[in-house]
Image (cartoon, rainbow, N blue to C red; front, side):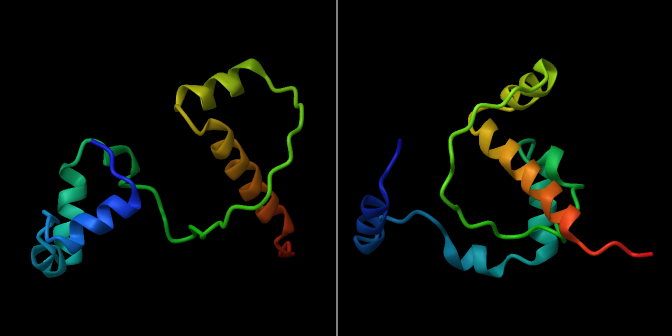
Length: 104
């Protein structure tokens, strides 16, 4: 079932929210990590170092035509919907790393 943000807000206002927020607020970091480790959907992301993650606010996109190696395109497409956004994120990370001052 899908709900719009307005529908969700309406349900919350009516007391139809089924989330036990007191239980959620009582969770410790260790509880959350244990739950994540037990969640098969999260398993492949558990050991990623997120300490360098940055919030990226959407900017205007520009349509371009680009030629890519077939295996690269297949790799990103295989990961599902939003593959172009993920490709953009990889390119942005590369650009950010290249702009950092070089030591030495």
